[in-house]
Each structure stands twice: as C-alpha cells, then as structure tokens.
Amino acid sequence: MTGLGLSMRVFGARDADTDDMRRVNAALMTLAFLLLFGASAAALMLADRARTNAEAVSQTIEVRADLLTILNLLQGTETGQRGFLLTRDSKYLEPYNETRFEIGEKLTALEARVADNPGQQKRIEALHDTVRQRIAILDGTIAMAREGDFEGASKIVGNDRGKALMDESRRLVDEAISEENALLAARQESATRSHTWLFTALVGALVASFILAFLALQLTRRQFMNMKTRRDQLLRLNEELERRVAERTADLERARELAESEAGRAEYERGRVELLLRDVTHRVGNNLAMVSSLLRMQQSKVNDGEARSALETARGRIQTISTAQRRLRLGADLQSTRADELLEAVVSDLADSTLENGTLTIVSDFQPLIVASRDTTTLAVVLGELVSNAIKHAFQGRSSGEIKASFTLGPDGIPLLAVIDDGIGMEAATSGKPEHPGLGTTIIDNLSRQYGGEIKRHTNEAGGTSIFITLPKLQVKHPDPVSEPQNSISETKGTEQ
Image (cartoon, rainbow, N blue to C red; front, side, top):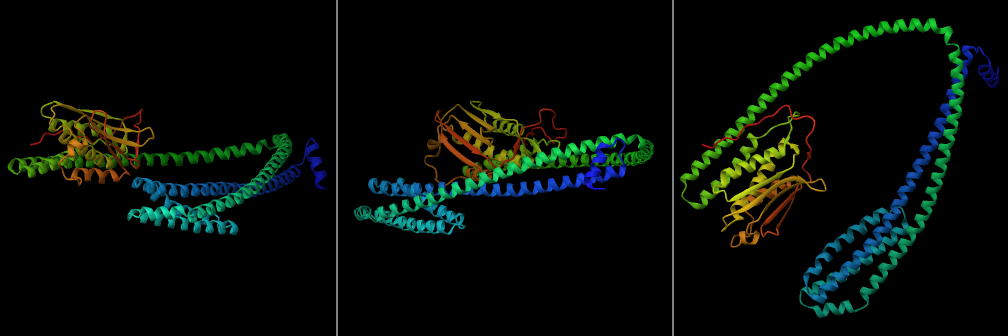
C-alpha cells in the first residue's frame, strides 16, 4: 500500500490499525524533523550572515568615526602649537602632548582594523606617514620655541609645507571616508537581503510547523480513540509504577535521614568555627589595645617632643585597628560586615580620645552598607588617618570647629569616603612645612590605591578642607532588609590601661 493510501486509511477510518498509525506517525515525525532541521540550518546560516554583515557595518561606521577623530586630533595639535608660539604660554602644550601620542595609537589601530582592505590600508599607511611628517614639523617648531628661537619657529610655520601636509591629510581622510561610505552602502544592502531571507525562512518554518501540528493533532485524536483497548495494560503499568515509587520513596527517606544527620554535623562545625573566630578577634583586639597602652606608657617617659608626637601618632593608628577588630560584627556568611557600625565606632573612639575640651565636634553620616570583613580594617585606618589629620592640623589657632565624616554610595554607585572640616584650610595648615607628604598621607594614598581610589582635596566654601576618596574596586552591597545577621563577633569598647 502506498504512503498516500496508508495516510487516507489512517485518517479516514473509524478503527485504524495500530501498526498503520505508528508508521504514519513515524513518517510525520521524520518529515517534521527534516523540515525543522532544514529551517534551523537555513536560519542559522542566514543569522550568521546577518551577524557578519552587522559587524561589517559596525566596523565601517567605527572606521569613519576614527578617521574624523584623527583629523580633529591633528588639527588640535596644530592649534596647540600655534597657541604656544603666539602666547608663549606652555599651558597650550598640554593638549598638544596628549593628542600627539593618541594620534599614533589610533592610526596604528586603524591600520589593523582595515587590514582586510588592501586599498584602504594603503590610504591609512599614507595618512600615517603624512601625519608623522606633520607632527615632526610641529615638534621641531616647538623645540625651537622652547630654546628661545620664536622667530625661526614662526618662519617655519609661515611656509606652505605644513599646509600642504594638512591638505594631503584631509584628502586622504576624505578618500578613506568615501571608500567606507561605499562599503557601508554595499554592506547595508547585503544585510537587508540577509534579513529578508531570514524572515522568509522563519515564516516557511512556521507554516510547515503549523501543518505538521495539524496532522499530528488528527493522528492523536485517532490514537485516543483506541486507548480503551489498552486500559488494562495501562492499569498494570500503573501498579508497577506505584510499586517502584514506593521503593524510591523509601530510598529517599533514608537519604533524607542521612542528610539531616550530616546537616547537624555541619551546624556543629559551623558553631565551632564561629567560636574560634570570636576568640581570635577578641584576642587580636585585646593584644592591640595592650600595645596601644604600652605605647602610651612609653610616651609618658619620653621628653623629646618629636618622639612623643611620633609615639602618639603610632598609638592612635594601633588604637584605630584595635577598635576595628573589637567592633567587628560578621554576617551570617562569616565573610562580610556592616561598614557603618564599624566606622561609627572608630569615629566615636577618636572623639573620646582626642577631643578633650569639647569645642570641636565630629558629625558622621555612614550609609548602611555591607563590605567584606577583610576590607573593614583598611577603611577604618583610612578614615582614622583623615579624621586625625583634621583634628591635628585643621583648627590651629582656633578653639571651635566641626568635622564631617561620611561613607556613602555616590550617584554613580561608586563608594565614596569623605572628610570635610570648616578649619583654616589646606594652605594655612601646611604653610612652613616640608612639601613632601607625611606618613599619614602616604598611608591614605597606598591603602586607597588598593581599591582604585582617587583622592580629591580642595578648599570648601567654609574655608576648610574637603577630602573625597572614590573607591571603585571596593565591593559593597545594601543590607538585607528582611533578616539581620544571625552570627556576629563583637566586643564593646575597652579602656586603655
């Protein structure tokens, strides 16, 4: 019997033969797989072609943008050179020095980008050579001007050599852009054709899928009509399945009991680790507090003022680290902590230990943020140095003032550590002192650099100093508003002996 006759028999008869239905179903499945495979292969091929075309179009647009950028940079170097020669002000050389190296880098990158286009590559190489000659002339005139020969440099500027090189550069850029425009039009047309073919292939696959789904639905209806004769077999299969499910349930119950036993053991180990961490943190904090006390005792025995100041500074730094260790509260993961609570404790201890007369006040604004516990001590040291420096230097000759300390997320989501005072300002505080940075500044710079920190210092509207440190590499997150940390390691503030 032919395939068409078999299909008519299966779909038309009331009681179709099971074997015939199976054969027709297999034929439909085979046809469906062939159609889907063909449509998928065509779609993948066309999609790959469309992606290639899109990349080519994107490359063309980028090449055009790079060409215009190079021309603008070259004009910028010429402007900087002439500004320097006219005004003899070296500030005009700052953009010149920045752009002259950037031009070379962009030309080198552009040569690599058009390596698949020999004609375009020759133009870029010619442009590179022309730009190199033009920059050489610019460098020569600037060198003469720096040696005082402004008249000779002006004569070189007045000849037509530089203008000819600039005109040649513009011509090469215009030709290269025209070539890229032609490539862009061709690539866009190719991309349009690929999109059209892709759409056609997808529509064809969709139509074929609907047809096959309809045929499969009809066959399924016929199969359900014969399910009554197989009910007994299905009942036996259900009984076998229930037996296997019961066996599997028993296995799962045993596995659950074993898992609960292991979970209890893991919880015990976790508790033991927490106790060890709490003990270690307690010991470290107490040991650092003892070291701080020893330094204070040694300070009282030293008569030299500079030595006493050095010991006091060292004691303050050790006390800051001790406070960070004693106030450390780890979260449930035993790896993170609340930065605002720890920094608040550091500022509070600094205020208690250094602000004796109460005329200076410290205002804090620490946003609730979660940071890794390994980073908290670093933040505490940096904040302690900033606040200590403000207390020591910002209010010389003054009896009152205010220091504001904050740790928040900036508008761009980058952590920001800031200390602002209304003191005498940076220039007055550093007048008469060596220009090289002190140890505190070095500590702040080195620790901030670990997180890609950028330090900005300036005089604020109140006449004091504002210091902002951005920490883009510091990983922070907001605390969970639902649950608080269940495991913590904390120590109340100790009193130095």
